[in-house]
Image (tube, rainbow, N blue to C red; front, side, top):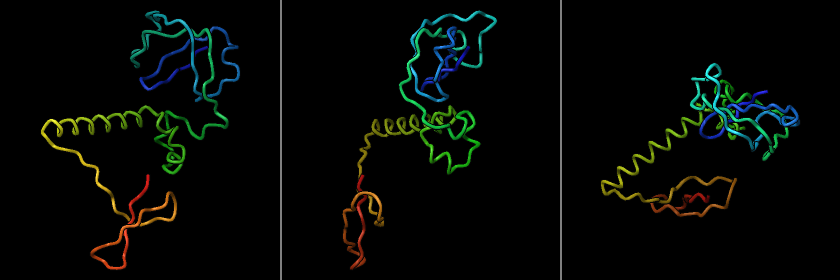
Length: 158
C-alpha cells in the first residue's frame, strides 16, 4: 500500500508493506511515521513533486491526533467548497496546498516590506483601534468621544 504523507513542506510517498500498520487510521489524521528513507527506482520517479525521487518505507505508524468524524470536504478540492463551509473548518482549509501557499506568500511579502521599511529608518508603531462596541467577546474598554459629546468608542480586547 501507499499513502501520501503531507506536512508544511510538501508531500512524501510512504510505502506500507505491512497492512496492519494502517489498521484504524482515518484520512486526515495527524500521524508520525518511523521508517527508512529510500531512493525510488527510476521508473517510479514522480517529477510532479519535489520529493519524487525518494519514498519512506514505514516500520511504525503512531496516531498523534484523531479524526472523530468524517472530514466535511476533500482537502485538495477545498477551494471548490462553499466559503461558509471553508471558514467553519478553516483549520482543514489551510491544509490545501494552494491556500497554504497564499498564506506563505502573504507572510513573506509583509515580512519583506517590514524589513525594507525598517532598513529605511521607519518605525512601526502599534496604535489603539477605536471601534463600535459589540456585545460578544471580552468586555470592552469604553473611551468617551471628544468630538461627539455623550458618544463612546470601544478599545477592542484581544
